[in-house]
Image (cartoon, rainbow, N blue to C red):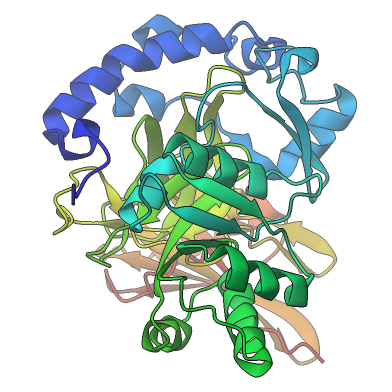
Length: 410
């Protein structure tokens, strides 16, 4: 059985960088056909953006800002190149955030992830993502059909009916959330229905604990996962090597320091920023709000693209201190003004029934006045007084947290 979806997956990384560097300016020029991107990139010479380093200098578009932008300029904030009436489907995610589906095959890049999970032409796929308004089911259906699979549009709920469909139609695999797969298999077992045809699953949209993966394996189902969002489709996918998630082809992933657009060193946890090559609805440096980190080296499976650790939490760490919001970008600004500082973390606590904050900052500097200087900058930027504690380099946790709110909930 062929191990890889196509030759793109096993390209020499230098070749991938060269080819993407040619494609990137074309994508940006095409995006300028949308008024939203024309405004977003107004001060950018897009023809010169032909490398990761150049891309990192472009402004971020925060996913958290999309609801307001779309409300101001419906339906898509003017970030769509193709008009709404030319789309295949118009979809809606929680937020609400609206997305267009184009007419191209595998518009969300799911086929590659399905292939890595063992799905092949002629397989029958039970699709248990929601078909109601949201894009998930359509993304996975499009990928399965591009791979040559038949799809059972199961959606969510209707467990007994779905179990009956499994027993009669005998799907080879499942796509949906990991929890619902367990519900289906449990229900089938109690009803005495045969669900043994399901040998593989590609899950997303919820955590896949090791315990659940092991339980499914014991019941004959090999479960892999992928990381996807509505705006760009599959960002990265797991392979049989089970060592991180391989970034999808024709997509750029950056890991940046939360509150900034600055890439972090390999291995450091930061916010996932995505640039997609979707011709109908391109995304240029979309800050997802999710945390992850780059894994060093190549996957043992032979795929050569960047690997990430997968979803590691949320980057939105805004805290309200003494009635004022303190944001990750403010903490990043303090760090920017003091080049001696490395990783930092603002810890918010309660002391004497009052909010208190302490900036823990890594540094190798021996300047005795540095703490006082940083404290003055912290107050200037946040308009709040806070203590500063200087610590040794590499002593703070590598978890992507810039603001840690440790106040008791009650």
